Image 1 (tube, rainbow, N blue to C red):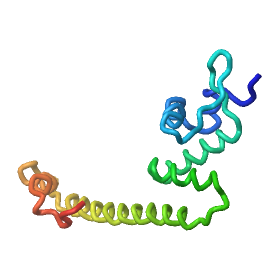
Image 2: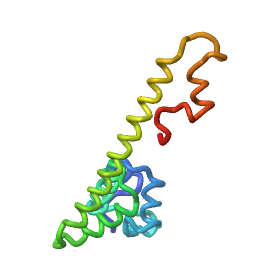
Image 3: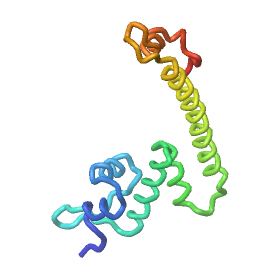
Image 4: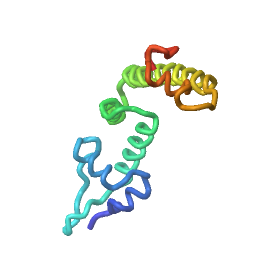
Length: 141
């Protein structure tokens, strides 16, 4: 007799869709759960907590490789946390770069919209700028 919950309930409790749970098992982020005689998966609390960890890390934008590394660290809690710090710092740097890029994009779009005379397309600044990237204020957005 198995304890734990079936995959549908694991999905409901964790907020992770069933196909995603299967995918995480396939790529090794989750261990293969025990199965009943009817070949149904059964998920214990430790796997549900691991699923919640993965879901939260994905919400924060961590990639699968980083999550795999973080899970490895979590599985051996006596290690120093320098690696975890390094992974988080790298993600922070990515977010900061994305913010800079989005800020430049916002400024460019504001210029396009401000330059629009609401006349005809033949005089439309939005169309002009989109047609000629050389007119953009920021060449890398």
